[in-house]
Amino acid sequence: MIELKNIKKSFDNQEVIKGIDLTVDKGEVVTLIGRSGSGKTTLLRMMNALELPTDGIVYVNGSSYQNDDKKSQITVRKQSGMVFQSYNLFPHKTALENVMEGLITVKKVKKPEAEKQALILLEKVGLTAVKDQRPNALSGGQQQRVAIARALAMNPKVMLFDEPTSALDPELVNDVLRVIKDLANEGMTMVIVTHEMRFAREVSNKIVFIHDGVIAEQGSPEKIFNHPETTELQKFLNILNEV
Image (cartoon, rainbow, N blue to C red; front, side):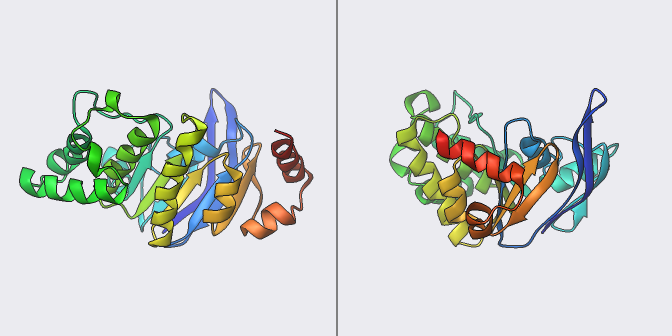
């Protein structure tokens, strides 16, 4: 479903991704962990062609893109739904209208059908009751769930999550994580960047520990959390345990 081959990325002559090979199979949930600045989010954004690799090839659902070809980048981007730390909702539109927007403008779905589909998605994320509310009337957790519904409206083959709970108050985190776990149980292919280790353990088929721009270790949650092999991963987990 996703294949990264010898991916490298430099910013201002500083290499931040130093040659990564990674495969995400259909229906698999892969979580990227590591310290801030290790390259997790950069790697995730290259799966969506929001960042372009300095070297290497990205395949998503059989499609790849070239750095000088916008059309190929858009083709890859259409394969996935991206959910960011910030919600990026349209402030002047209701929750329902935010989910409908892409259906109408991108997929050219007629408004009555778009509304029908959007209502189904809002029900899926538990937000039917606030469908007519604008973002400023919603909690952070509710806004993030609207953002997930909006991404799902594009019928993506893959969902990419970049720290989806990092901007939320602790009491709002579980509602968002519950939606992501439901998607995992339905067989959605997902790549998640998170610092929520308990959640990563519960939802992931594979954990990938990125350190200093390379994959230092990867494996099942049981292996990564209970039997870390590298000193880098051991130190990372010890730091988390001390927090």
